[in-house]
Image (cartoon, rainbow, N blue to C red; front, top):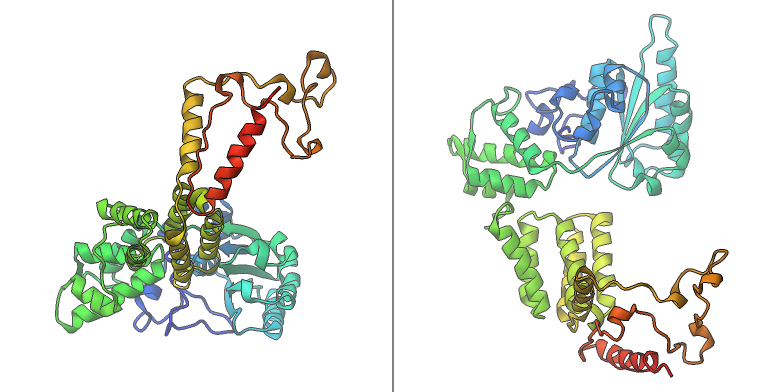
Length: 455
């Protein structure tokens, strides 16, 4: 989809009373603004929104009135879509920021849109773009409803937060929700090439060294605005040195960030991730923190890191500390809720907790052993007393008739067979005596003794 290149510091803002995001002074605008797409055909990425006959194409090419709610990470094109809607449909464009605008501002825009529609000389429709709409209070969102419901304005609202939690239901139901995805490295590469060669951009003034390109892609993290901002800064550094090639040192100096020798597409990506997990498994909290820092500085997707930690919590810690899984999942949720750079703290807390937790692989060994037996054909019939008995005729064929209810036994455990005959008596779970699993080792031994004492 689109570059998503807006709200940059110093970028010229459209006048409150109207004007298009496309109407900017390209001699002074930042590179990210200059490279703003002018049509749907110039958009990069988000192909799931651009298919022929899609709602977005109907809105733009068919000029159909329709309000949009755009949900996605920063730099994925939410503001760009608003610009294209305004530019290609020749509507008046008004932008409000949810950070600074109030109910009075919303009502003024809607009243102005009504007046435009009623002009005898020819009506003009209004596109109202609201960035960070999740920051609007309920009262502010309520103020939008008449304009949206009566189609006095075409609302295009952008949010990085889950709209089902941050946008009121009446507004959500009156808008078409479009979910945007982070741009891929290939998408970002297309935008970089376009910016380097296009007359609106750097107009072939510079070449980008391969290691510089790789570092830019890592730092972008799917955010096109960030990628083009860094490219422009590096181009300024190269220009100051009268250089025609943007090398890695120039890029690093320009963005004040050291390049970590870390190839996301190659072996080092997996090597560093492997080293993180093995350091956690080995309880070396300092080494684990080092590898976490390398992944963060290399621009690794924090969701990838979080997923690895969630796996490690069960694979390497398991019942040694059953709370470790909750810590890892909480960190993964925090990554989604907060985002980087703040979420680095949540990831670091999880790494410390997992590295220092007592270790046990008994859980993964148990499930893999059970799966191996299933694959080997050890899948005997379910014992009759465990079969479903909630239908007419079940008792006649003996299903569930001899089942004993565990809660009726003072121990809470009844000595009856649960496993199929073919694996009855097999011990898959073999707990260690480390950490909290020691208590489970004693408990499972007692339970197995009761279960197998069937006299």
